[in-house]
Length: 351
Image 1 (spheres, helix red, strand yellow):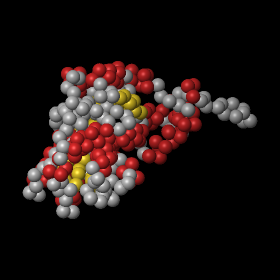
Image 2: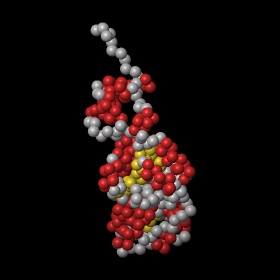
Image 3: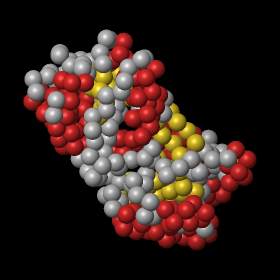
Image 4: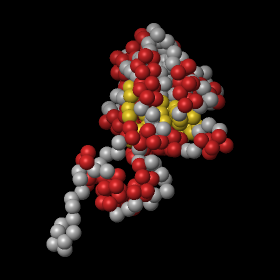
């Protein structure tokens, strides 16, 4: 090249290669390859150089080619019952950030509480040769044989819901967290009743119920559990809570129980319960105390602002992705990767 000639422009978009990324970043191809293979050994500054070069070149790795070489892609599969559920929306943000830290991308599938769609989602991710799957199963054992088979083929970590303890899982410490709300209301001289979630999540539903009952009995009180509807397999929590609490109040349950407070298994249940209580002249935060669980964003904008329990979504989401990065021999030595994260009470106007 003559002295007055400009260097050749690097290609953009689909024409760029990993060699071009290495050249633009001033690094070896081997180092760039480590980045795309999810290596944790690279320094943050090195990662930033590679990411900046990718942005400038509009470079996206050929995940199919990567999967052919490695037998697995740099994709993480996530299967959830509903994307619109606030907890899932929040934890997805954490999962995507954590996956990017490992040079991985996330593929999201929603089962919409349908066993057939759940099976199709799992099989799709299997065909994509994903690095691993973060999975919240629906409360049905229809797909259990398929799930057990997939657990033998690839890494699967259960998020928030499981069938049993023979698996990798990350979740909230449900007994501990619901007890925080119960003990707080008891400390205020109130007797809290309890509204459980519909039959759509296991083990969070029975664990939170057990947390309530244990806390009440430990304080010398008989539990007051609002009758549920086992046939209502729904994620429409607000409507479900409104109907159950309305029926309970109309049947004399509130008056006969002597309850002066209500703990709901989720914040969305508390929103529906509040409307039902007002129908019977009970105003949350005034003549009845009300607490939820999850600390979704809308809690501090309700009237009254909702007392609740905060789940450590950052820790839960990060741990789910971290589980997928561990070497098989590490897990073989330590057993299943199982993490429960404690909740934190957030006191607001409703209690």
